[in-house]
Image 1 (tube, rainbow, N blue to C red):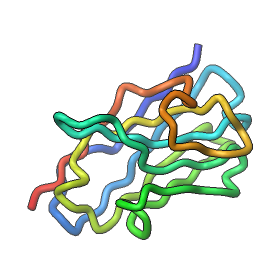
Image 2: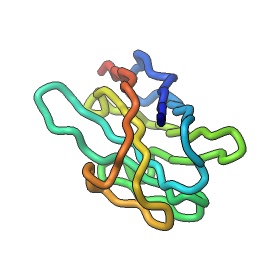
Image 3: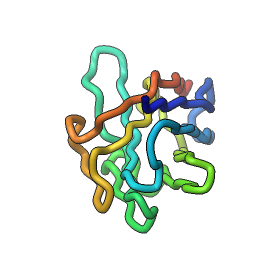
Image 4: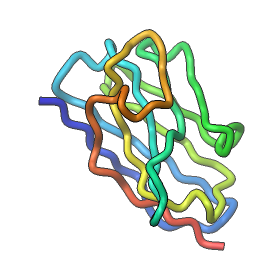
Amino acid sequence: QVQLVESGGGLVQAGGSLRLSCAASGRTFSSYAMGWFRQAPGKEREFVAGITMSGGSTYYADSVKGRFTISRDNAKNTVSLQMNSLKPEDTAVYSCAQSRWGRYTTTVRDDYDYWGQGTQVTVSA
């Protein structure tokens, strides 16, 4: 059974930084691409960032490009999201997800088989 557990959320002022982490267990972590999604109140869950199984390629939503960085440590079975220059509109529940693919990352929610429970990020103005 795959388990994904996020940590690192919290309350931060606009312009600040947070680092989210996701610990994975249950299947060979290094064989699957990973992604981060977020869901704000009253909105649909949206793709934030993705990384291939090797970590060699990453992809970002336009709204976070240049501010967020996704990375992974296959030796520790973790994926992280460094969030800088945070804005109030970044406020959401952030979830990590494990893709059914390995060599490429997608923005499509249905391409992700497993999800964490999410961690709240709140950015105050």
